[in-house]
Length: 626
Ligand code: ATP
Image (tube, rainbow, N blue to C red; front, side):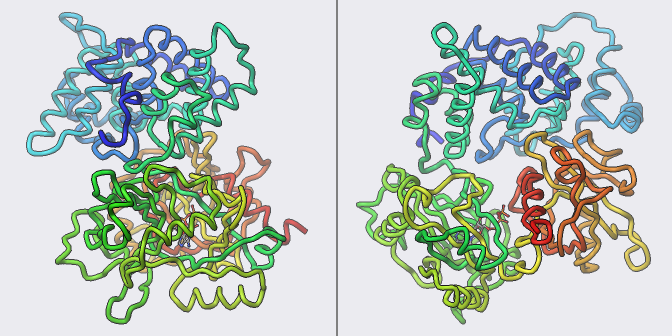
């Protein structure tokens, strides 16, 4: 991390800064947000609070932002996850609030909210002396300590820290402290709303005296911050850059760099080659094999080391010990840093061919020893995003490709380039699509080749990249990745396991999961057993406040959202029961004849197919268009 952040970006949090904002103030904000349903009002509450705490000290904004999104740092940094187990928290609440464990358990069963249990327990507990009130800074630091604590005594250390904080909690503080520890703030505050609030607060802080802050200016600021976040997903760096250089200068000072995984560009689905030709009419485009593996963003760091990040920005370097960047960088003296976009694919060394995705997924995710590797991986590179600290994402794809080829070299079976073809002839494209499938690929990625449209757009699901998946040409053009929200007990052969699951998409505006279908097809008995073992510990007493469902489609058990299923559907239809897209449409949309394909462990639950995408899929169907 030290190598990737400039002193200016670190400046505001350097030294012993501990925010003195009373934790109680932040919790009162949470309480108010919890009671508010309008998104605009929530944003107002949140941004007003941010403006207020910045008046005291700008630096307060960083811990407050993180606590609002219930995170402790950037997603790509390890040791930042809370999500403490119920068991540990119940024990701690019982010990520090003078209640028996069975009483705590009973109350938890009644309310389904450990935060509530802790708050009630604290409120009736007589206190001999009043401890000093908690501050945001202290709580943030303690949460970081708790999240990063590992090893033999870590459990004891965690409990001690939580107890110390709990004893100092007043009123609603205990409720939100416990919920934060569980990583379940559940006040209906989506990260998107926090980002908007943050933009507004930074803007007011910068311009208050001398500029009229209208909606247009807020939208510009928001866009700038959002763009910066796609390249540098780190609130600390972004906030500090805004404070140092001004929001409008963010682009110049805060852009992608080796050591920080940028959000990958994504593709839109298409259902036919003719659709591709229609979209790219008269423009230069190029097609590449769409490899079926895992996305790998490869970084060469200034110190010569390599890092490989997953689609989610997780550092996966340990997963691929057989990959050495210096084997395929042509000239290590000339090339000091780079960022490549690749797909890591399982590779059969003897037969020199690609193996299916299922083979890759048998590899361990962490701590892989090179001696134990049975399934080798080959990287298929398709883009270069940064070279020697120069960002290339705004260069046309044609140029990026040339640079990619000029600074790297092919090493068969280890580092290759995505097979490409530049043609707009429909027969040639059809042949290329068939060929890709014969080479164990999923189909094609078709990309704009020249001009502004061919720039790399971090995080964006862009029209300038189209995916053409051979298997899905008959359905809606793509599979969907849906979150498992609940399950139905199995009958007959499936007794004792779950026989069906309730799935939902994610609404990025509201932070809610909207039900989309019930699924029971595509599972082997063995898989059902594995799913039972994995999901049963995540059962919750009732649906979460963020689940949007109809009472007629209630499952036998509800889960915490932790797992995504990739599913195929025959088509999408309007539904009286399911709720996908219902926040913006009269009726919800559901999947017809859904079929399980695989687990999507490389995606977080918030990366599930969005409600917006479901609506797009629905509307793109021929019979709807007609
Ligand atoms: P989505 O969120 O779009 O569903 P996904 O992870 O399910 O994303 P796909 O929709 O199947 O992925 O397609 C995009 C992915 O295809 C990329 O994230 C990348 O991992 C992979 N890929 C394989 N070959 C290429 C290529 N030539 N160019 C770009 N991406 C490729």
